[in-house]
Image 1: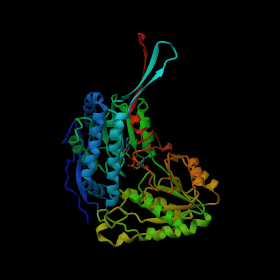
Image 2 (image 1 turned 120 degrees about the vertical axis):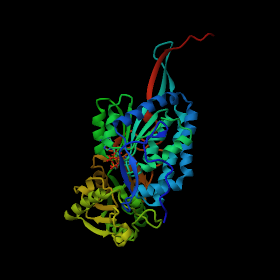
Image 3 (image 1 turned 120 degrees about the horizontal axis):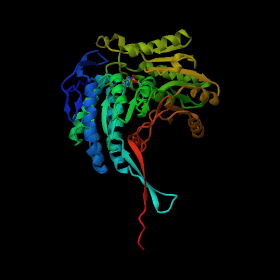
Image 4 (image 1 turned 45 degrees about the horizontal axis):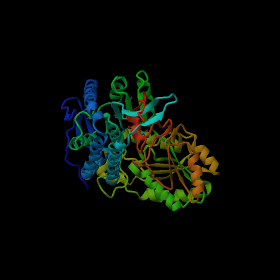
Length: 490
Ligand code: NAP
């Protein structure tokens, strides 16, 4: 059994390169045991304002710092993160609940964004465009936009922050980061690493606190031109409305309802293995997790049988125990929400083929917020469980009669984040993938997300992207200068 590491940071907001040792505290609990991990001081509006002021002052010099030097600092944060991987992973498991192996994967993923954007910093360059009139030309340049307000959720509390912070700093901007209230600890753990990497004070301010409060300050503050949120579609909509009067630029990474299409003749052993990994990753609390599994009638029963076998055998428990494959949900409210979707579906005709309650015999898990890994069949499109994002280890199977029908039904959702296509005929897989109204598709791959690619949703799943060469543009302003060309002496 792994242990909770000794803290290398203090449980206070990080402002201007120091801990702001003041404020009302809230308890952070381990969702596997309900034991308190720390009391963290949360910010009020005045402290957020102070953090923004400090960021504004620090950003002026940072914008003038050579891009290569900025990139070196950003890359170094990633290197330091990897050096401390085990401590971060243990803290992440204790705070968020995900199994230790998933936490290690998150640290690697977070570090990859610092590494990627550390390199991308040097590749922000403009261009010269010919002018239609004589003796003039256009200079097109990309300038850092200033201070960005960053807001992240609890499911990937480090990686969601890393994606934004790395791009923001590499672009020459300053970041004021509000982590989720449930998971501020790994976020605060990043502060000493940023300082050690040589990041000047004020460029990364970390302000744990309430979303509506901090989001409200970001939305109203005239010196925060960009707000980047990862969260639910409902929160994105609320933030958009709050930011509308100030015409803020928003980058929104929101909720999903991913279709997972199993084509006729697919290798069902492979599909089951991949689908279980996808669905059980972080207990299904992932925006890109498979939410609706469309399987052709001929393959339905054989796939259900394989999924049940694996779900029933999976070990649920405290993620610090390395034999555990499925951790708790983030809190009791999350269990109630997933439970109500499952109960309603069953009342409406769905059948539960598996509800793995093995953890109930373990006394040490009694206070934890666990949900039984569940396989449901006879799910129909109109059920709430197929229309809403299910943030839990629940697989719902929907059968279809023809591939065209599967694609049409897959697209019948206001969400458009991720999709999956599994089959043997790669031409058919690609045609189906291209028809899906989503930002990313994995063909015979359960986790296609990498720092190298732009990731973002369409429809109500968001605006803008993170990662890839595009991710840094969320933090850049385009400026055009029309200038006379001095006559060249022959
Ligand atoms: P959430 O309730 O929307 O919270 C996300 C963040 O927004 C938290 O830091 C929260 O603060 C803050 N927040 C809440 N209300 C706010 C407001 N009015 N103004 C500004 N910020 C506000 O989402 P969640 O339940 O934590 O996370 C799960 C959701 O995130 C799912 O829908 C999931 O699909 C989505 N997600 C999307 C992606 C993606 O890349 N598209 C990735 C991961 C997760 P508090 O901590 O105070 O609540």
